[in-house]
Length: 112
Length: 113
Image (cartoon, chains in turn yellow, blue):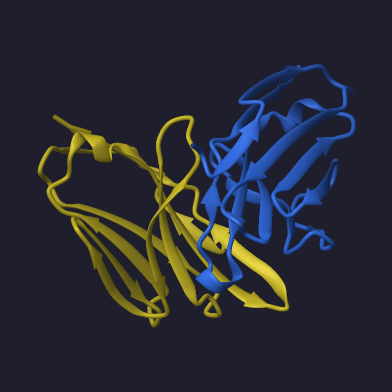
Protein backbone atom coordinates (compact mmCIF):
# COMPACT_ATOMS: atom_id res chain seq x y z
CA UNK A 1 0.00 0.00 0.00
CA UNK A 2 1.31 3.42 -0.95
CA UNK A 3 1.66 5.98 1.82
CA UNK A 4 -0.37 8.45 -0.22
CA UNK A 5 -3.11 7.49 -2.68
CA UNK A 6 -4.48 9.86 -5.29
CA UNK A 7 -6.82 9.12 -8.19
CA UNK A 8 -4.91 9.90 -11.40
CA UNK A 9 -7.98 10.97 -13.36
CA UNK A 10 -8.26 12.46 -15.88
CA UNK A 11 -11.14 14.50 -14.54
CA UNK A 12 -13.07 16.59 -17.06
CA UNK A 13 -15.56 19.22 -15.92
CA UNK A 14 -17.40 22.11 -17.58
CA UNK A 15 -16.33 25.65 -16.89
CA UNK A 16 -17.92 26.99 -13.71
CA UNK A 17 -18.22 23.59 -12.02
CA UNK A 18 -17.08 22.84 -8.50
CA UNK A 19 -14.13 20.46 -8.55
CA UNK A 20 -13.25 18.10 -5.71
CA UNK A 21 -9.80 16.50 -5.59
CA UNK A 22 -8.85 14.05 -2.87
CA UNK A 23 -6.00 12.11 -1.33
CA UNK A 24 -5.86 9.46 1.35
CA UNK A 25 -2.82 8.60 3.40
CA UNK A 26 -1.76 5.93 5.82
CA UNK A 27 0.87 7.56 8.08
CA UNK A 28 -0.76 9.34 11.00
CA UNK A 29 2.48 11.24 11.71
CA UNK A 30 2.00 13.61 8.79
CA UNK A 31 1.58 17.16 10.04
CA UNK A 32 1.87 19.38 6.98
CA UNK A 33 -0.48 19.04 4.02
CA UNK A 34 -0.01 20.74 0.68
CA UNK A 35 -1.56 20.96 -2.74
CA UNK A 36 0.59 21.72 -5.74
CA UNK A 37 -0.54 22.63 -9.24
CA UNK A 38 1.61 21.53 -12.14
CA UNK A 39 1.14 22.72 -15.70
CA UNK A 40 2.53 20.62 -18.53
CA UNK A 41 6.34 20.69 -18.65
CA UNK A 42 6.51 23.03 -15.65
CA UNK A 43 7.54 22.58 -12.05
CA UNK A 44 4.91 22.08 -9.33
CA UNK A 45 3.68 25.32 -7.82
CA UNK A 46 2.49 25.49 -4.24
CA UNK A 47 -1.23 26.23 -4.18
CA UNK A 48 -2.43 25.53 -0.65
CA UNK A 49 -0.68 24.78 2.63
CA UNK A 50 -2.25 23.53 5.85
CA UNK A 51 -0.71 22.58 9.15
CA UNK A 52 -2.59 19.85 11.04
CA UNK A 53 -6.38 19.57 10.67
CA UNK A 54 -8.99 22.00 9.48
CA UNK A 55 -9.95 24.09 6.49
CA UNK A 56 -8.16 26.83 4.66
CA UNK A 57 -9.62 29.06 1.99
CA UNK A 58 -7.84 31.18 -0.60
CA UNK A 59 -10.01 32.75 -3.25
CA UNK A 60 -11.68 30.00 -5.27
CA UNK A 61 -9.65 27.28 -3.53
CA UNK A 62 -10.45 25.49 -0.26
CA UNK A 63 -8.24 22.86 1.33
CA UNK A 64 -9.62 20.47 3.94
CA UNK A 65 -7.72 18.10 6.19
CA UNK A 66 -9.42 15.34 8.18
CA UNK A 67 -6.68 13.66 10.18
CA UNK A 68 -9.09 11.25 11.87
CA UNK A 69 -9.99 9.80 8.46
CA UNK A 70 -6.52 10.39 6.95
CA UNK A 71 -8.16 12.24 4.09
CA UNK A 72 -7.44 15.59 2.45
CA UNK A 73 -9.37 17.47 -0.18
CA UNK A 74 -9.00 20.44 -2.48
CA UNK A 75 -12.11 22.19 -3.75
CA UNK A 76 -12.07 24.58 -6.69
CA UNK A 77 -15.12 26.79 -7.10
CA UNK A 78 -16.14 28.38 -10.39
CA UNK A 79 -13.51 26.37 -12.24
CA UNK A 80 -11.83 28.01 -15.22
CA UNK A 81 -10.02 26.58 -18.26
CA UNK A 82 -6.83 28.04 -16.76
CA UNK A 83 -7.28 25.60 -13.86
CA UNK A 84 -6.55 22.73 -16.26
CA UNK A 85 -3.43 21.13 -14.82
CA UNK A 86 -2.25 18.23 -12.73
CA UNK A 87 -2.85 18.62 -8.99
CA UNK A 88 -0.48 16.93 -6.59
CA UNK A 89 -1.17 16.41 -2.94
CA UNK A 90 1.82 16.27 -0.63
CA UNK A 91 2.38 15.74 3.05
CA UNK A 92 5.30 15.79 5.39
CA UNK A 93 6.72 15.72 8.86
CA UNK A 94 10.19 16.12 10.28
CA UNK A 95 11.34 13.35 12.55
CA UNK A 96 15.11 13.20 12.62
CA UNK A 97 15.17 12.45 8.91
CA UNK A 98 13.37 14.26 6.16
CA UNK A 99 9.98 12.86 5.14
CA UNK A 100 7.95 14.44 2.35
CA UNK A 101 5.61 12.32 0.24
CA UNK A 102 3.76 13.29 -2.93
CA UNK A 103 0.66 11.77 -4.46
CA UNK A 104 0.94 10.78 -8.11
CA UNK A 105 -1.32 13.64 -9.18
CA UNK A 106 -4.82 14.07 -10.62
CA UNK A 107 -5.06 15.48 -14.12
CA UNK A 108 -7.88 18.04 -14.38
CA UNK A 109 -9.34 19.45 -17.57
CA UNK A 110 -11.85 22.31 -17.42
CA UNK A 111 -13.81 22.60 -20.63
CA UNK A 112 -14.80 26.04 -21.94
CA UNK B 1 13.30 35.99 -13.37
CA UNK B 2 12.93 32.45 -12.07
CA UNK B 3 13.77 31.97 -8.39
CA UNK B 4 14.93 28.40 -8.97
CA UNK B 5 16.75 27.89 -12.26
CA UNK B 6 17.63 24.54 -13.76
CA UNK B 7 19.94 23.89 -16.68
CA UNK B 8 19.66 22.39 -19.18
CA UNK B 9 15.91 22.25 -19.87
CA UNK B 10 16.30 19.22 -22.07
CA UNK B 11 19.09 16.70 -22.46
CA UNK B 12 19.48 13.63 -24.60
CA UNK B 13 22.41 11.38 -23.81
CA UNK B 14 23.62 7.87 -24.43
CA UNK B 15 23.94 4.95 -22.05
CA UNK B 16 27.18 5.10 -20.09
CA UNK B 17 27.75 8.83 -20.43
CA UNK B 18 28.33 11.06 -17.43
CA UNK B 19 26.05 14.06 -17.21
CA UNK B 20 25.41 16.87 -14.78
CA UNK B 21 22.23 18.78 -14.11
CA UNK B 22 22.59 22.14 -12.46
CA UNK B 23 20.38 24.15 -10.14
CA UNK B 24 20.78 27.66 -8.81
CA UNK B 25 18.44 29.69 -6.65
CA UNK B 26 17.98 33.30 -5.67
CA UNK B 27 15.48 32.66 -2.88
CA UNK B 28 18.14 32.65 -0.16
CA UNK B 29 16.99 29.24 1.08
CA UNK B 30 19.38 26.90 2.85
CA UNK B 31 17.58 23.69 1.90
CA UNK B 32 17.80 22.23 -1.57
CA UNK B 33 16.50 19.01 -3.11
CA UNK B 34 16.60 16.91 -6.23
CA UNK B 35 13.51 14.97 -7.30
CA UNK B 36 12.64 12.87 -10.30
CA UNK B 37 9.14 12.54 -11.70
CA UNK B 38 7.92 9.50 -13.58
CA UNK B 39 4.40 8.86 -14.88
CA UNK B 40 2.40 6.87 -12.35
CA UNK B 41 5.12 7.12 -9.71
CA UNK B 42 4.94 10.76 -8.81
CA UNK B 43 7.83 12.75 -7.40
CA UNK B 44 10.59 10.83 -5.65
CA UNK B 45 13.44 12.29 -3.67
CA UNK B 46 16.97 11.60 -4.89
CA UNK B 47 19.14 13.75 -2.58
CA UNK B 48 18.71 16.68 -0.28
CA UNK B 49 20.93 19.20 1.46
CA UNK B 50 20.05 21.33 4.46
CA UNK B 51 23.16 23.49 4.20
CA UNK B 52 26.42 23.71 2.29
CA UNK B 53 28.16 21.00 4.33
CA UNK B 54 25.18 18.68 4.54
CA UNK B 55 24.31 15.99 1.95
CA UNK B 56 21.69 13.30 2.50
CA UNK B 57 20.42 10.42 0.41
CA UNK B 58 16.77 10.28 -0.51
CA UNK B 59 14.72 7.23 -1.38
CA UNK B 60 16.29 6.61 -4.82
CA UNK B 61 19.93 7.78 -4.65
CA UNK B 62 21.56 4.78 -6.35
CA UNK B 63 23.26 5.81 -9.59
CA UNK B 64 23.27 9.51 -8.65
CA UNK B 65 25.60 11.87 -6.83
CA UNK B 66 25.29 15.52 -5.84
CA UNK B 67 27.45 18.49 -5.04
CA UNK B 68 26.48 21.56 -3.02
CA UNK B 69 28.94 24.13 -4.30
CA UNK B 70 27.42 27.08 -2.46
CA UNK B 71 24.23 27.99 -0.65
CA UNK B 72 22.67 28.84 -3.99
CA UNK B 73 23.98 25.96 -6.12
CA UNK B 74 23.18 22.25 -6.04
CA UNK B 75 24.11 19.95 -8.91
CA UNK B 76 23.06 16.39 -9.69
CA UNK B 77 25.33 13.98 -11.54
CA UNK B 78 24.65 10.69 -13.25
CA UNK B 79 28.02 8.95 -13.33
CA UNK B 80 27.05 6.41 -15.97
CA UNK B 81 23.60 7.07 -17.35
CA UNK B 82 21.20 4.19 -18.02
CA UNK B 83 17.85 4.21 -19.86
CA UNK B 84 15.72 3.84 -16.71
CA UNK B 85 17.08 7.21 -15.57
CA UNK B 86 15.00 8.79 -18.31
CA UNK B 87 12.69 11.11 -16.38
CA UNK B 88 11.79 14.69 -15.57
CA UNK B 89 14.14 16.04 -12.91
CA UNK B 90 13.28 18.86 -10.55
CA UNK B 91 15.33 20.92 -8.17
CA UNK B 92 13.51 22.44 -5.22
CA UNK B 93 14.27 24.69 -2.27
CA UNK B 94 12.70 25.37 1.09
CA UNK B 95 13.23 27.67 4.02
CA UNK B 96 13.51 26.12 7.48
CA UNK B 97 11.51 28.99 8.91
CA UNK B 98 8.65 28.65 6.43
CA UNK B 99 7.15 25.31 7.27
CA UNK B 100 7.45 22.62 4.66
CA UNK B 101 6.82 24.67 1.55
CA UNK B 102 8.82 23.51 -1.44
CA UNK B 103 9.59 25.78 -4.39
CA UNK B 104 10.44 24.03 -7.63
CA UNK B 105 12.40 24.87 -10.75
CA UNK B 106 10.98 24.28 -14.22
CA UNK B 107 12.63 20.92 -14.57
CA UNK B 108 15.07 19.09 -16.84
CA UNK B 109 13.72 16.47 -19.21
CA UNK B 110 16.43 13.84 -19.49
CA UNK B 111 16.39 11.06 -22.06
CA UNK B 112 18.97 8.28 -21.92
CA UNK B 113 19.16 6.26 -25.13
